[in-house]
Image (cartoon, rainbow, N blue to C red; front, side, top):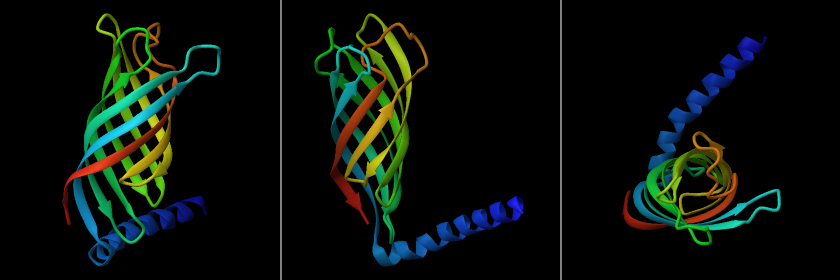
Length: 166
């Protein structure tokens, strides 16, 4: 019985995916090159210091359809505003959107030019191709002793269109 339900669910998902392309023609679909700007609040559960980060980056968005869905990928950097030493975090990111839900992941390497750490950051939140508010827990992959920012971020970012094609 479980196999039949799983099979019907997968067939339904595939059918929905093919049908969505017909709605793209009717409800609009576009590709966009964006300048992303944002703010991240890095909070801690303990008495550690909270950090503030500025995000700047470029991304490419493919979005549209009846219910509003698509994906986005890009590069950028996070700059520590109140870290002890000047800290930056170059990153690559990818996001999937469906209606008002944003799910994605980032790979960030924070450095103060003496030490560095690599982090995988899965995130989930609300938003669309223009604006998103996400909760970003961080998985520290290397150099766990270097803590330039805490393990959780609350991120608000805005995309400003540079080039948009239908």
